[in-house]
Image (cartoon, rainbow, N blue to C red; front, side, top):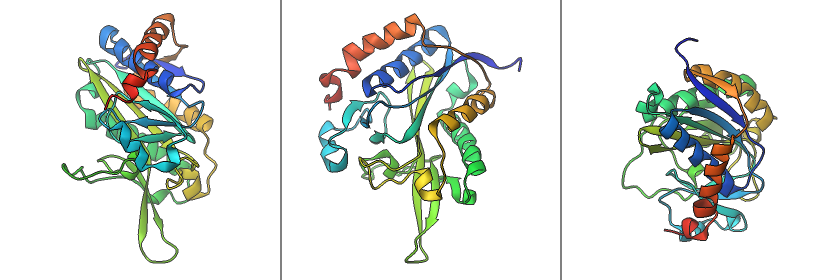
Length: 262
């Protein structure tokens, strides 16, 4: 793949919410400053509610089930996500990368790949699709990201046992942030239901499957890079990224002033 952009692959152990967000920001900074692309997979040490950048902190009281969870604020927009039984990914691309120039194209490309992988494993694969309706501006939206719908979200349709109606469940959602032309996209693949968000079934709950974060990571680490014109070398977080992440952890994501700023 001579036309592939060089990049790095990071497979992180579970971290706390503030650290996970600090590392993602450090990788976006690296893409903006040094032109380095990164694909990262990670999980969470404990159930964590991440608020979208523009959400009000007080709005978390709309969702009593997650009040006992740790809370952090993302740098990306969108609704709140309860991170627990999921796999989380992040992609940081420099401004020179073709996908950095078109936000919806990156969103759709990643989600199309995820749909193809999920369809391999699920018995009701035909019911998985991309949401095709754009957001209607001005509408009041639910507090939780997975109760919202945006163009390109991955949803799964199920038939209701008591009627002929179809229930549509969002199973993958992503959000983006830009920095001087570079772009960060991070997203959650909801695998199983969490007691901190009991209204949100995961893929395994809906399909009777046994997908795991480890198994999905193994597939995605091989399939995503070439699909995104990346040639990724598996690395550990280096000293520079770690130092940047520590800075943003201490000055931003780990501080109540950031979390409660709105």
